[in-house]
Length: 468
Image (cartoon, rainbow, N blue to C red; front, top):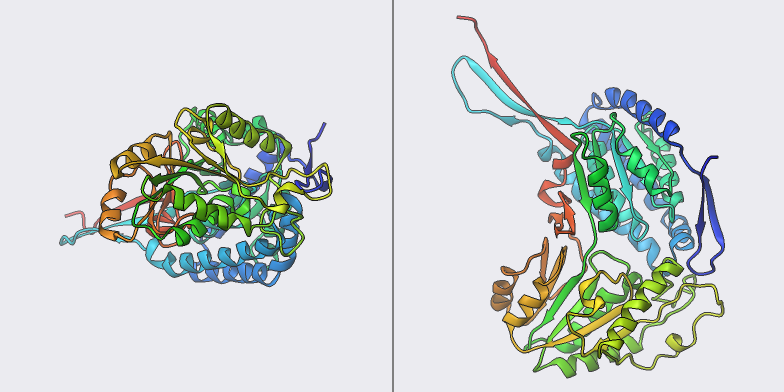
């Protein structure tokens, strides 16, 4: 029996979208069609490919309010922010357009009389893009634009929580003039189907953004053949606040970094280490900042914290909070009427933001990815102690240092085990920098100077111009 994907609203627990799942047999046929389309698309000049893709992205921007509202319906982010994700998608794409020609240019070999040598960058072929629900447009643009510009055909596999994103993107790019078969959608909510899908021999590249556990499963599933795998996985991102920091400024940034999107971001701030000299002042500033937040109906424009994605996610977050409290953590969340009086529905997956102090590294909230609006604050007495704790993790996506002594901050950055390190900023993948995870946070990269590298393979040309 064919799979039917039903998307449940995090705010109401009602079905808000229903799409037909793709069987493995159908997926195999789609991959074959993608291979056929690839043969033509890769011969289209870069300028023409760019024109079509720009038109598609322009249509997305024109429809950002409609698409943003639909996104909120599916995954629960406050509607005031959903359209902004699509705006940021456009800004990332602009960077990719600016750098495409240089990134895809042939590499000349050394000059030698009677010979010509160069390295050409050839598209890898049908590219499967498996993307998560938490920032689907931002995640998607990281792979979709360089894949298409490089000359690849693309298969989108959206999270079952946001199936309509895949459908809308495919329809819009078809409207923009993308040839048939170059961009197709595969819908599935079954992990086993995904594991079988990535084994299909017609795929030239698999990119995945999501949990570390699924990323590891995909590595196992593709182990029987040589296919490139690009993974952006989880995080447990630390922040260290030094004694010279402006605690009011830092508190505003950390609360936003930890609570935006209900903490459901791979690069959300999940652990805070505060120097003993400013620990209490920082906690007070965090409390003051959190008092201004509003938890509520995501369709209320004044709401800035909506529900988490599922009942299972709500239970997981609460389990980490309970584990911390049972081991001596203290809940110092400030009074906030919206945290105590949740929206008038028993069905929504609402989790009020929480500040925890007196936390230690034997607590799950410090060791595992929480993916929720929790701010655990640990007290440290030195830079060295902070560095040791920040690196005490199986993840390594981002880390931030908060200080007015930039030189010392840079020295600390050098010792941090993460793909992106910040001073006085957090939770911001800049398009001109490589977005890459260390440890269990990923494999490969997107964005930045290497944004196109995953989407082409090298072919060396070596010509002797005579037989003499």
